[in-house]
Every structure is written in C-alpha cells, then in structure tokens.
Length: 163
Image 1: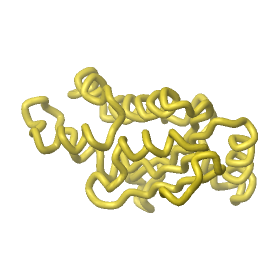
Image 2: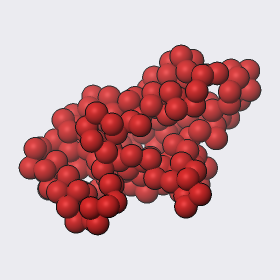
Image 3: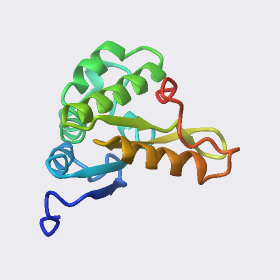
C-alpha cells in the first residue's frame, strides 16, 4: 500500500478470513489517512460472534485481545450492555459501533447490507461501504441497487441496514 500516493482516489476491498480475519482496526485507521473508499466484509456471525460468550466470565483474555485488535474502540461497552440479551441486539450494537468508528475516521457516508445468509437461512456477514464523497456513495448505491437482479436486495435501506 505504500506505493499508492495518499491523494490518489482508491477503493480498498477488505475481505477477512479465519475466525476473526486479518483486518485489524489499526489497518483501517491507516487506510483512512488516504483518499480511500472502503468496501468491507464484516463477518459478524461467522467470526466476531464466536468470540462473544453469553456470560462475561467466559470471555478469555485471548478472545478479548483478538476483539481489541479487530474492532473499533468501545466494543467492550457494547458487549457489556448486550451480553445475555437477544443476539440480534449485540449484532446491531457492533454494526453501529463500526459505523461510528468509520465516521470518526472521517468517512462521511457509511452504509451496509442486510445480513447475508446461507441457503438454510443462517446469518453469515454484512457488507459495509464507507467513503467521504456523495459521488462515491451514489455510485456505490447505484451499483449495489441497480446492477443486481431487482429481486435480490443487496443493500439495506438507510433505516434498515442494521436489521
């Protein structure tokens, strides 16, 4: 990434793999210093949720360290408020935390998909797009809304993206 001039408009696609993935929050902070738009696979149900036990006492130091590295600051507060409640509240809390974290890094426009699911209906992940310019947001929304079969709703409405 050091070969890319910081002022060059750049789309960064982040698709983590593994239990928590290789995309650390520090990487996103570095990317945010440049003129970038981000398209991110946020593997909440596939990875993050697996490190969030239903009881505080089961959260190990190793789990917490992974979450510290890969989530925006403040994840523990979200976890503390939602642990033991319906898991959908926890997912919403983490998506909102991610949105706020990206906005604090200077991304004016942040929106995301509805949850992607398996054929059996099990939730997997969300896609999040972040950028600083209305033109980029319009293009991303156009591609996500119009380029796909209209029967497939990839992008969630603004007020529904956390569902």
